[in-house]
Amino acid sequence: MLAEKVYGLLKRIPSGKVTTYKALAAAVGNPKASRAVGNILNKNPDLIKVPCHRVVRSDGSVGGYVLGTTQKIKLLWREGVEIYAGKIRKHFILEKIR
DNA sequence: GCTCTGACGATTT
DNA sequence: GAAATCGCCAGAG
Image (tube, rainbow, N blue to C red; front, side, top):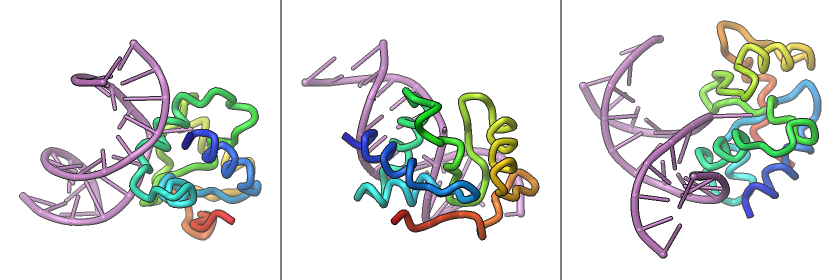
């Protein structure tokens, strides 16, 4: 099950860093499943256990969030991630997951 | 089990 | 460089 892996990997993402849907998909062995990954996070069963707000789009844009992108950005800043013009600074993007 | 959906990605206007 | 287009995959109905 892809969802299981995704959640597992997400928990490994350190605070102050973010990752992309693509990297996440690649990490589970399916680089093209980025879309599916987003779909999974969207239906995220445990918003507390899984830091889904640390996942952004590969182009640097924030992407979506159940509580709204605004809230998402807010959370990221709180963790030390800088975002300008709705774009995540690439320096904070963890493209390789463990 | 088939069809539709979507928090995406890369490419092409 | 922004917007539309096509392709991809895993869940949900």
